[in-house]
Every structure is written in structure tokens, then in C-alpha cells.
Length: 237
Length: 237
DNA sequence: GTCTATATGGTGATAGAC
DNA sequence: GTCTATCACCATATAGAC
Image (tube, rainbow over all chains, first blue to last red; front, side, top):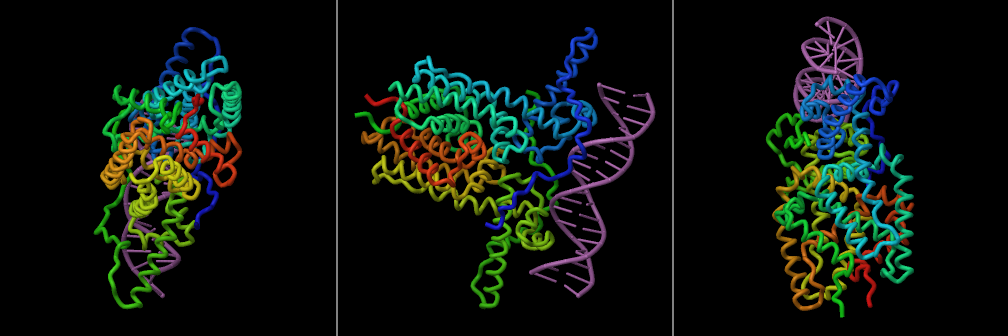
């Protein structure tokens, strides 16, 4: 109870300089320049991929540029040629992450059958947990730390997206197609249960000996989740 | 895809020395010694509390001994008098965490009414998310990083505990008191949905503007979870 | 037990040759 | 663009006076 200090992330950041935004430099030009630009982009991608894997395990502070450089098979100085600073790299990773992350939330719409829509949503999210576990973990980490670098970008679109889905769900409820649950809490439960399989993977593996990479286990998890969310555990009379 | 390197936590740890295990030095002795021993224990507690708050936000690497010392209102050198190293402190924090964490899992037993047992379990776990969010976050962080320091201690008791609960749930199902769900996946869902309110607190706050500290929101979340888990979202005919 | 140095080494970032 | 030095800084941990 001694520790409610609102401590900032701290540690130096030696000036962001002129913020070149190298990544989004994309103007139609000669083919030679274009080829070079594509090369640069591809190298940035490689580094971002490597960084994602490490950041998602050890966090921003637990990962050194040396490790990332080694994993991406470039020198540290070279890495810093493509990214002005560690923070810029980190933000680039987060930016790419959000693209993968916000997409599946778009799925269900009012004209769908709610039962099929929810079942499909659970499948998509569980596939995401299986295929993009690093993204899931980094997202989780960032949110747990207060999402200092992401929340500003995330809050508005997330809020709007949730509100639109809440409206769809409420519509289904009003039409008698769904039991009267609180839409927001339903959404949280859909997120929580599916992401759990990625974020708590080692715990799940410790308990069951299996992961989502096992196709049988994947289907078992999906079927269980769908049954649970749709019908609950109280026996139908 | 370039980064499946099984990188160890790295960073030096300058020798654990003789592993004094200062914490568990507890032998019946003269009252003066006993008083001193209690003083030491109390100071260790203070530091552990401060460390928990910081580790749970910024992780092991994102938190410096300086910050912890400041938060606990002791000098850094003094802190290192009570804990031989940063790692020993971290492990002490984890050890205390596990006590809080594994207790509520004990609750339900075969002779209870399953519906009431699950409802009660959800309440206890949600109260835990409200009252011990730092513990929840640090646990999550540690598991996400592969729980290198915790898994060894955790795996065996967790597995046994889960197996015993699986047996209870399976018993209920066999008695027709519960719909036939996979017990393990049910347990994961109970954990996931409740912990989500602690770990994704800032996201939930961003979307709803509220947290579990708001009593109305707490009851709303609990009621929603109970309804969802018990009866699902498919309207009863 | 608590303090003031200080040792030691990793880390992000830069300078400047090629 | 890529490399070899090298910087300044900060973090953990220790030594030794009081």
C-alpha cells in the first residue's frame, strides 16, 4: 500500500530529433528510387518482425537493440540507420500490431444471424490467438502498462468500434434473438476468453500439455467456448 | 518469422552468492532478537509492496532499484542490505504473490450446489481483480514471459489443483447437474473473464469510462459474467 | 543498519571512414 | 548503406567508514 506513485516510464530518450518518419516516405518517383524504397521497406519489416518477437516476450526495457539486431541479422548501427531510436522502432511495431488487431473486430453486422455471428467471431479471434500470439502478448503488455504510447491512438477508434458493436448486439436482444446480456461485458468476455489462449499459453501448456497449435486441442477449445458462450453451463431442462 | 530464438533473460546477475535466504530465518530466540527479526520482516514487507506496484507496471527490467527504494522510502544501499540482489527481491515478490493467487482456487467442492459454487467463485475472483490488480498484472506478465522463475514452483501444484477441480466439475456433469462442458476449458474461461477486468483495466476504462472500483460497475460486471457463464446468450425457449 | 563513495559493465546513440 | 570505434549515461552491486 506504499506505492501509489504515478511513476512515468522514465529513462532517457535523448531527443526525438526532427522526426523524419522514414517509414511513410512514399512518393511516386523513378523506378530505381522505387526499388531502393522497397528494399528499405523490406528491411524495416524484417527488423520489426524480429523486434515484435522480442518485445512481446521481454517488453520494451527487457529487450536490447543488440538482441533485436542479432535476431534480424543486421548490425546494431545499421538498425539505427533504419530507425532513429529504439522508441521509434517500438512505436513502429505497435503501429503494425494495431492493424492486425483491430481488423477482426469489424466482423459481425446486424443482418447476420447472431448465433452464427458470435460463433464465427470466436473462431476468428481464436485463430488470431493461434497465429499471432506475439501480437496478442505485446498488446496485452502494452495495455497492462497503461498503454502510454498506444492509448492515445487506440482510444477513439476502439470506443467507436465497441459502440457500433454494442448497437448491433442490443438490436439482436431487442429482437428477441439473444438473451438480455450487457453488450459491453459480453464483448469483454469474448476478448478475454480467446486471448487467454495466447497470453497464458505457458500456463495452459503446463496444465494440459497442449497448445492451440495442436489442431485437436484448437477445435476442442473452440467448441467449448462456443458452447459456453451460447448456452452456458446450467443444464437445459 | 525471423525470430524464434529461445533467448534467455540475459543481463548479468553477478553471482547469487551464498543464498542466505534471509526471509525465512525464523527460529525461536530471545525477545530482543525476536523484535529485531520482526522489524526486518516488516521492512522487507514494505519494500516488497513497493516493488510489486512497480514491477507490475513496468516489469522486472523496466523498474530500477532506485525507483523501488524511493517508493519504499529507503535508500538503495539499504534496500540491498535487505535483499541480496534485484533478482532475489523479484523472486520474493513472486513468492508472496503466489500465496494470494492460489488460495481462491481452492474454493469449490463436490458437495456444493454447482450453480452457487460457480457464482461464488466468479465473485471471489472478480473481487481479487478489484482488490489485487497489481498481483494480477504481475502474474500475467510473468506467465507471458514464459514464467522462467515461477513455472517450476507453480507447475506441479497448479496441475494438481486443476485436476482436483476437474474431477469435481466432471462429477457434477455426470450427476446431470451441469451441462456437458470440457471442465478444463471452463476453468480457463473463469480465469480469463475475471482477470481481464484487472489486466485490461485501462482498456475497459477507455471504453466504458469505469473500473471495478465503481461498486455499480462491479455488480454489473459480476451479474453479467454469472448470467453469461450459467445460461449463455442463446435465448431460452 | 545506514550512509558515502566507487567499481563495473551494459545500453542507446553518434562520428566518421569507406 | 554499412562498418569500426567510441561517447555519455545509467544500473546493479560492493567497499568501507560510522
